[in-house]
Length: 300
Image 1 (tube, rainbow, N blue to C red):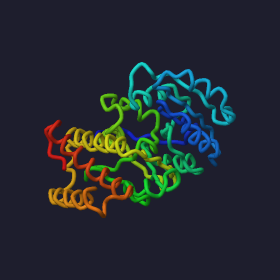
Image 2: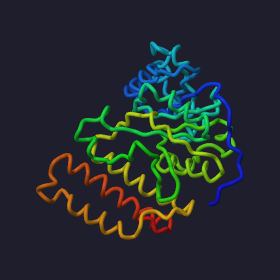
Image 3: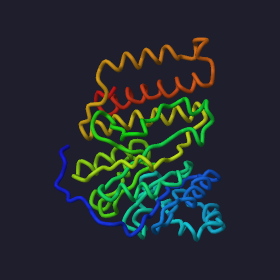
């Protein structure tokens, strides 16, 4: 796809609406709410928890949260259709301010997150930031997955930069112009698709190096496997949709070789650390192969 002729947004922000897509997120949600309560941002902001579960427990919990007033905290019901993308769309369309910042229910933003987001939004329409794994994960789990370099934006599929949905900001008028999150991507692949659609529509991507988020990994081998396979499969779908070239061909035998070397049948791979690394490496390869077959694209 080629970039459109959109006119990028400009001007100071009136405030920030933080949107959290929620589904069975207690008690981890409190870590995120506490982190938002500790923001050093001097402007106006609100926090919207978009309830994709339809949970009476969540509503009662939010009503009793001690820092509710400080956060301008409220819930909206997004349970009519399952999926993170739908929850984010419902939350965004109820927002009071002209800049939307997304974070996840089980992570924790650093104290300067909103300040850094607002600064980057001064000359950008879509803003991303880095994530770190040390704060919320034990060292073994943190070793399973290699995160992108925090000093520069991550370019996905050798195409365009993207940012994880747990650390993404966008001007409301741009969100409306591109039609919001694509709900045919309920979760996996949705952030890549959204970032690429915004940029190929002619809007500017900005990177906020100081907008750091503590990212929580899944701790079970089975759930980690399902997550990374889903990522790989849906990345192939996005790549086909936008014509992204993906990795160069020589990467496949390298990836496969590492998978074999770390296979848990070998004695040196029996530790939990090695097994977790193998799950992520192998699951990514399996997901890409599955996606290549399912979506009829070579994305390895």
